[in-house]
Length: 438
Ligand SMILES: NC(=O)c1ccc[n+]([C@@H]2O[C@H](COP(=O)([O-])OP(=O)(O)OC[C@H]3O[C@@H](n4cnc5c(N)ncnc54)[C@H](O)[C@@H]3O)[C@@H](O)[C@H]2O)c1
Image 1 (cartoon, rainbow, N blue to C red):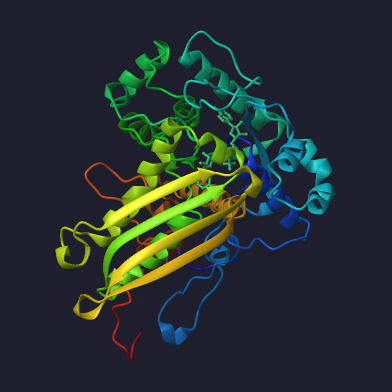
Image 2 (cartoon, rainbow, N blue to C red):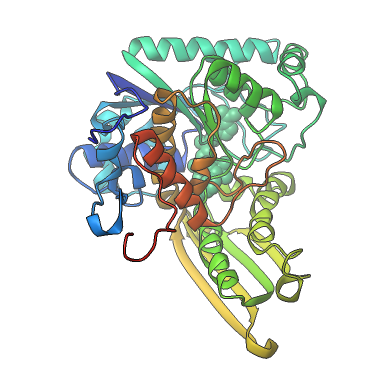
């Protein structure tokens, strides 16, 4: 650990990671951490576990692991819990999700089977394709939020946790726009008591966590904690929050490629993205109202990176289309195609084709881990409200009112790294030093 003044306190005891939604992503994440802890696999894709960070001038050649620079929770001291509308334990849910190899899952059967989902806060109105049976009943949404808070207290006590983090891994809810009930905490709490239709289950979990000062991240594109009332509550209760929507397959590629094209002043005429996937997420997104939430999340990315208003010769009227097609035979093995029509010197047209044969939950699992580990760090460093430095992991990053979200993955990484340096009490790096002194 650095000898500098580190802002965060050291982690003591156990960290409980709670996920509302315990399907493909959550089980792949939990089983993955267990496999890593048993020395069966490496935590590939996780910056918190494998990433290095440069400290000081380049001449020093000092690039320690991030977890040597800031005090991160050790994975051996992490426990898992959560809620789902199906009662399957995590072994059964992981087998059903069919992401990880059954031979690996069998080795982890005992610890996975012990994790039993708590009854969910669920309303079919917001996820039309699912029929849940393992569901809480109460007269008001406020009573449901209180029930979630009781679950959290019990989990913490039963598992002897020192601290908790919550990451939404539940299905994508239907598209809802910010409205009056979302503006202030008073309006939101009245809405909870009056069963406002503008408060879906994901907001009830988020409210419960934030009210209790538990860091909360939203892995789906639905609003959840991205409303003024919950941002305000997060500030009041000293809670770090992050959202929305894990940045995995096609959007990850987009935020890697688009900044490169723009950096070289290449024009873009059109970007057509389509993909097929056959998991439960794909089935939920087959409903137009649920797809709309995802579409909005995916479409904002290029507009912000390319800034057509500032570069009309290169990007004015560029055409951007995103399709998701539910195709059961592929299961979690998504295939994403991108056709990019670009323009070069003297406006000569060229095309780029990307065919990404990815595994959705394999890309998402390390993001759940990093969000949980870094949010816990933020909490111990006294940081609260929107954690923009975690935009790196998110397709539709939550930003404070009046600021646009940053989508360029390289700028996002620079911000993440500088935040780590800041927490570590190290000098920030702006890459502006003169060659001989860098
Ligand atoms: N896999 C990826 O690459 C990726 C990327 C970005 C975002 N996401 C989002 O992450 C979420 C999880 O994806 P997944 O592939 O694990 O989906 P999944 O369908 O396998 O799992 C979601 C689980 O949430 C449960 N659920 C739904 N509503 C709930 C509620 N109100 N309370 C508790 N549980 C509830 C479902 O029963 C299901 O088990 C989805 O919203 C998806 O859009 C996934």
